[in-house]
Length: 244
Image (cartoon, rainbow, N blue to C red):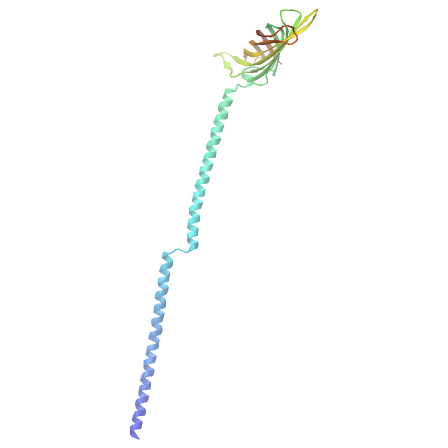
């Protein structure tokens, strides 16, 4: 009986000891697990610091591309400004070659006057700009029974102002045509001429006048004159015109 009581006491003591050991062991295990979890979280934080997320990388690339786009836009603006400046300089140079109307003559664009030469008569010139003009002549050759009509386009390449004066010279040239009619008792005959007019005009600044001379070498041909073929002739005249 006594032996059984001792055995029961030992079992009870063993159970109490086991319970105490378990109570001490469980908090240690939970603390170790929490420590391992904290370490793993710390390692994850270091990895996140070292490696950028995709959205962060996207922002970096976008910044670089925006910088390159800004540089490209700046280059385009600079190129456009350079082209505009070059075009402006070219326009200014071109304007410098053109003399304003008031500096080489006054009056309107229509000039009326006279001519003396192979055809004596009237001379008209339409001169709307310094470079371009149209000349029309109507006169009688030395033969009193004839009449000549001439038409010529003139281009004036560059005006030259005489130093120390208001006189401006205008070399000019252009295609010219003339039709001449002869009236006789037995009929009317017509011939023609086509050639190149070469002339020189002089004007005075602030004066509505022009003095001119020109020659027209060209090929002549008979229109209704029997037995007349192709020939060569030179027409020439001097005169003056007043611009209205």
